[in-house]
Length: 139
Image 1 (cartoon, rainbow, N blue to C red):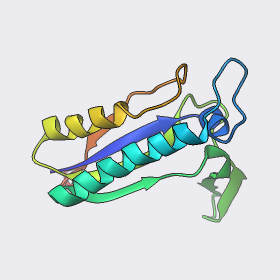
Image 2: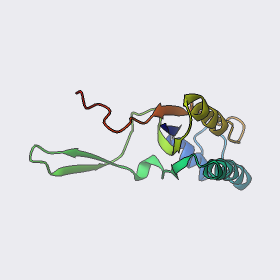
Image 3: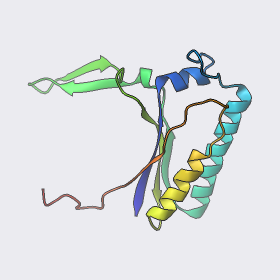
């Protein structure tokens, strides 16, 4: 079964990693960043070795995203994004093909254990099954 394992963050988290933390939040040092990249890289390597890795990507900061809607005639309406009112946005993900939800949650728990500076806000990792072919055909 395939699962999407989603990492969440806010624009302010990306800012802190770039050396511009919000007031009262810690900045990330180069050592902190290397520890995070090493941890995530090890997860990727382990998943590749086990044959469970389908895809994994870290996303750019939310301020680089665009919001797209469609006008009545179908032409795209593009605006800078994205999410001034959003609490968190997708920061990265893994698509894994593993035996069951328990295994997917083990992977997510390992991602939760990523090293970070003391005082950094942490978020839950979301695990969601990916529908099988034909899923939803009844609609």
